[in-house]
Length: 125
Image (cartoon, rainbow, N blue to C red; front, side, top):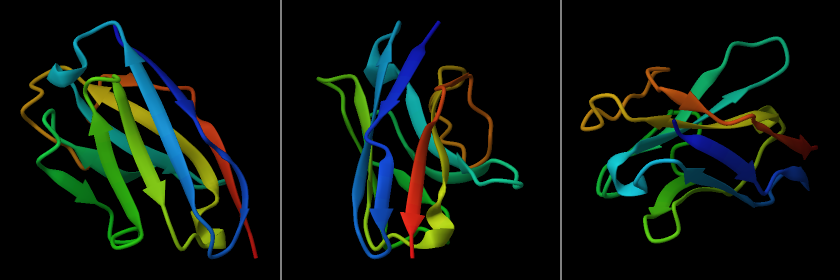
């Protein structure tokens, strides 16, 4: 069992930055593939970014490429999502996700085993 707790959400103006954090517990963090997803009102949950166990491989949705950066600190059991140049369309609930099944796979879809509760990000225009 893996528990994920997100933090760092809030309200920011367009063009601003935020950094989300997600702390994982219940399993050795370096064995877990991690991802970030988001769900805007009235829309389906969508992939944002993912990162391999050691952090050497990262993947991004086209909509955030060049603006968002996913990273991890395995000594702190934490994955981060640095979000720059934020746009109103980035407004959503952001979810941290963990994959322990076949963790050498770094999905860009919803093939994750555990999910955080989500955290609200609101970008004002």
